[in-house]
Length: 307
Image (cartoon, rainbow, N blue to C red; front, side):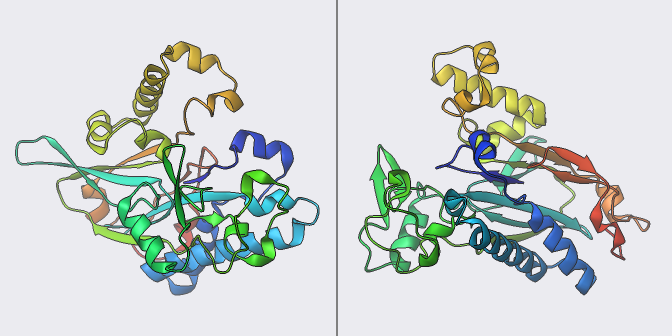
């Protein structure tokens, strides 16, 4: 699941230029998995690294004719279930939350990923620690904490102009203007990686972009638990905050709606423990890409072993 973030609106980006799908991390991951014959944290980290390097290479070859490509970036959340274990990696503020049954058969939630967003105190402290000589590494702008006063997320694919001096943008582009030349990367493409061996009480995992979590808590989302209902509930909450009707939001053009609510992508995976731990379990012939809104044959089916 990958989502282009501010300062660009994805609906407008496609009018200006075409970029490779950030979900190429899934393709890279498959390649590394095939080489090693398994899934591991290192495989996932290598896939993210290859995706970042590939995208920066694309920026390097196209920025002369499309300079704003250097300001294009994306959050990325990847999950792979392999032999009863969930492997997760994320950049940015998309989130994975597991829902499991408590002792009273109530749904309890646990956030499995870490939000890389400057609104979080620990993220701001991390940035200040990494940049002790930069008093403006985080700035409060219009009531929102942003890195260099520009972007909220601290880890991304892309956003080359905030990672390498060679990708500096023309100062006349005020939207992305830095107060001083870049001395070192202020954003990172190093994902946070997590693993969870499924427990019998685990029932489902929600993968969603920050557009959902802006309006629903982890617990609220888990109590709904169905992707379409989650999206509708989040949109209804966005409409309420804007003193609008849900039906009115649905009628708006995508470019206009982006000012009302952030993009929302949701995938809910229900856990079949009998299948996962069964002696004949195999890699399922299914792959879901939230970024592309597509479902198709799993590219991991070439791997040996059980799921």
